[in-house]
Length: 101
Image 1 (cartoon, one colour):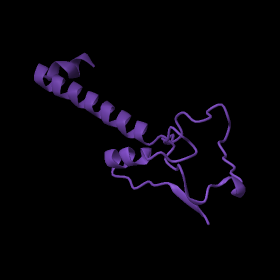
Image 2: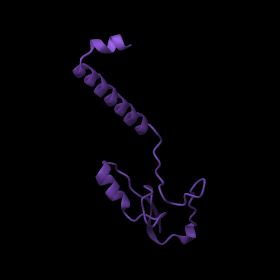
Image 3: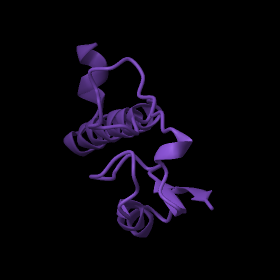
């Protein structure tokens, strides 16, 4: 092994080391991005699943907006937080709209 290392000059060894570090960084970035994305970051995290049940009688007349982005401070109701998310990410999230006549 030392015979092989003696054949390379310092510049070549530095380039090899830099390439190895770059490869490790790219590998880390690609594997960390392939992990599942967690959408719900703070609503009812103690529950195994968040389910919201709304009785039709409890709806106010007109349009009722429900959050689908998990960023609303009034969850399960929409407060428009998706607009900031959409501007930052180019996404097109919007609320679930339920009409009661």
